[in-house]
Image (tube, rainbow, N blue to C red; front, side, top):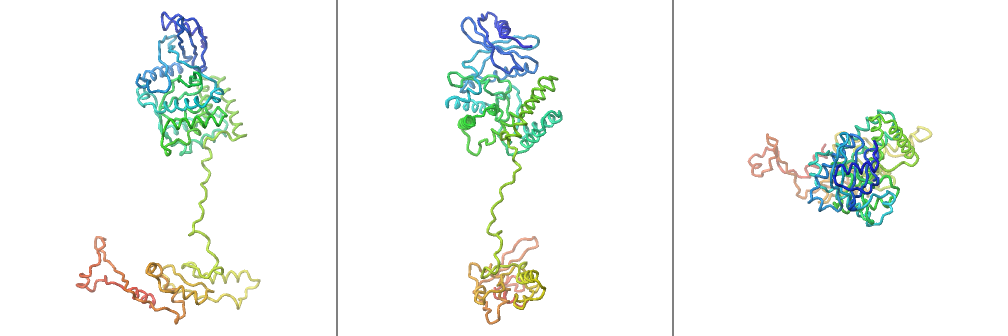
Length: 481
């Protein structure tokens, strides 16, 4: 039942005997849950009366009383804004109406706040940051909810499933919200103390300064984006960015801890609140609320279809940019365009493949006498690993350069070029020189542990296969094969 300002003034007189009220005016509030009024007594003191309309609103109001009791004088002294204090209460029909000391300032319209001066915007950013930095004990003492990031995401997904079962929400919106809830990177935030019902109606402005915050019925630990959902209703991007900038400045967090997705989650929460409003009407069997919620959801769906709507993170499935190919993955250059090429054991038949390609492209299958010379197939046992060999068409001079003695720095890398030496004419094969480099072979114990080479032990047991091996001997063994 809706109560007028005069009825609320009578309740205030009953809650505070001796209060001489001379004036009463209606005060903006959540019209679906509360009746509010500002009353003035004969001493020109102002009081705020807040009365619940139903049991759910009464529960929220009782919660606010617990929250306000947690704001100790020490906490209040460090806040950059004023918090209400309770002056009295009266119970009517099992529902309690509360009277608060009225604070300076008045709620302002969103359009007026959007056009505020820089000082007002900075005040609002500082106020929200101060709320998010409140001690967690304020919430825990009042036995209020606390949600982690993943817990909140799962909770919203569960609510979405229930909403989808009603069949009253456009499917495009259901898909849009589900995609946003599934974007895990958007939900990697640090849970903080959240006002939960912060908007222009709970903010008190006095002479272009934000001085107070009311409506503490939904305080909890959760997503800080919840206190920015009201920004989704403004079309001023400049105001939105200025407020978020002031907020991050007063939070004073390192750059790697900034919540970069806070406004995206706030816009998502604003859209999803319409579906929650629909569910509240269904649960209360209020056809008027259901019809109003459906109309707003249909309007939102049309706006999203026409303009794409606000960014709520629904494009997370776009693939990552393809990395540029590295030098190792670039396509090989055709042998005809280079003087030499490095080939592996899989590419050793490159000249034969080229000949086959020319053969397939010719009008007749006859062999071309001037074609590429036939290349003999390598022996299967002569290529235990990739080789570096001259490609057909190279000059003898370039092949000789390839067969030069490896330097000290790259000797180990050039060692597999024995196949290259085998393909050179015998007079051009350089003699391998022994520069004293040796290969020491260690032994392996029964416990699979490496036993370092011991020259003294080798002299005592010459039959043990740990003798130093010359690179010349290795090359000769490979050649003999």
